[in-house]
Length: 282
Image (cartoon, rainbow, N blue to C red; front, top):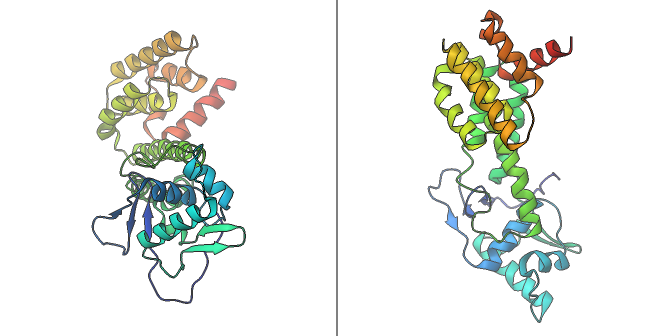
């Protein structure tokens, strides 16, 4: 993501939320955000946040905001939409929504966009987990997940840019949930995780990493039979839906649980999965 542009003015840049209905805040702890009214204004803000810090041409804005129903006066319509969005952002002087020869740029600091904060926190959390600090990892990942208020761009039109960015953010959330559970498993919170993991596997029965986490959480909670039963559940789901067997890590985990392997009682699910994968190749 490009660096945001420094401004000489002392005015506090707005904070924009896209992880849910679009909203704008004007201070760190200002209570509820201001909702963004107007279909075109929401569409413009959504498009600009999808490529924060990068210029979007008038032609691209027309395609994203008006789709197949372009206005009769193209450039004037875009200029009016930009003016209205500046009012929403309390940016009448154009400090944050900039006009450039190549188009328009939303140039707020990255951390003033909730999605960018979430991305940073997920990176930090995963790095902490890799570095062997599950407590910091869990905290960072929880803060990342707290950025979500609902579905990304919940009240914006599903334009090409929004659909692409929404898909990226949904994948990011899944990644954050999985890594946070890994950290909590390493911290010994296996009993507290069982209910959450049962819900996750029920919602997405073909996602094997959550099944591996569930089996580990059950086994570490002294529920060996339930852990083995979970393996049978995922094996049946994969066979019925995809016609395949569970992957090597799940198969190896099943065998080690059958042997009541004490080596499974420690570590994150990802580290155990790596060990199981290596064991399966030896």
